Length: 311
Length: 275
Image 1: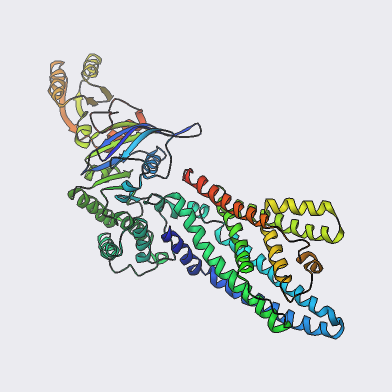
Image 2: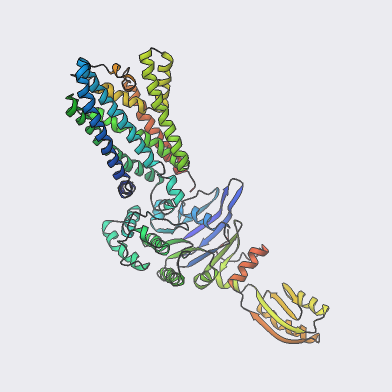
């Protein structure tokens, strides 16, 4: 495991930052960490990179305990509220961070142009950071995080200041890292972005992990069905409700949540057998967004699956 | 640590803190030199033998306000060294790198300390040269006294660095200046106490020197310089800018420990702080 936490908890006085976080993340993947604002996403990342000290629990990054300097040499981090010394040029900033990473002079000279090119700032390294746009500052921050060619990169909302093209570029960088066996820990509330690239996700709300697992496992966990039925009767509605996890009726429109795809034909059978007319039956693609909204609004548990969140 | 120290020096230069300070120091020294020149010349007409005392008075004055300016620079430069970086977010990218937090604090101390010491050396030499040119009073540049002159801002720097690890920038500025004022006013009261024979004032002065020993260092420098061979004027005669009694070597030991204590506390507090 490249990252492992066990009951990691951070309290701010009596307020919970995050509570009993158990994660186990394998190398070579993009891990998406999702949650609404204030859910505790940044708190967890800040603990993992050494900005915050956990109240209790343990964590291992690259097989070493939190705060270990050797592990940090191979860990990159792009903070959410990034800000860099405006009076430095991009290259000087990178050179400073390279010194913090204890890169040798030769490594510095080799890596700085590489990462600048990688984040799309090739040729802009001589400009002062004060003259950079917000998006360029985020890019240079990403370049700092990539300097030591890290095995594990924590990116906290890495595309918040970027336009759609910039976002796409950053996604490509993340995928390129994965293809080289690196691990990316992506904090984000951009669900579509996470859905596009992440292998595993965990969803956090009010400091607790609500669901975690491989993306495809989480998304097939429930099936949404929408039916158009004329002649609905109370017994039929009861029968449908019994067959499904949840059932909402609005005139002739019936929305159902099923546990498995195999249950779909039984719905049609029930409708036809009751003498009602079935005009349409559609399964809806269960998007990450729906899962997310259900979890956050419904406060639902029980999604915590076989994924990376076993303690 | 060297990387942080280097960046700190770069910051002082790039953000024009050094430039502004140098320009204002030149203005101050210009004013001071003019004052010494005319003061000393006009004094000659009626002061007679007291003229020599005037030279010593001017020397003490120059060193006193020099200490003052450098102390301000120390506080202003370092007041937000950590708190400011937490407030604006630059530190978020630095702490997670493979550096110990102690290296960040000590690197900053080293960086600011180098700049302050260089500035203090220049200022000290400038004052001595101005006095020599205008009054003919030759005070040798002694490494001991020069070292003490550089030590003054370092003490205040350590105090300010501790403050910046747990106070907001503004609160730290207020606290550091207040503490500096305690030493400064206490030192004045002590000298007045010596002149007036008031033991209470002397005791207040000693107490304040323990709270903030910067003023005691200044008194030590003045005493050393003015009791140097060839200068027969008693530091006693310099009023509030003089030194009624020489602070003992133990006071220097105390000052050194004071500095180390504040620096160690700064490291300790920052090393345990959530950011």
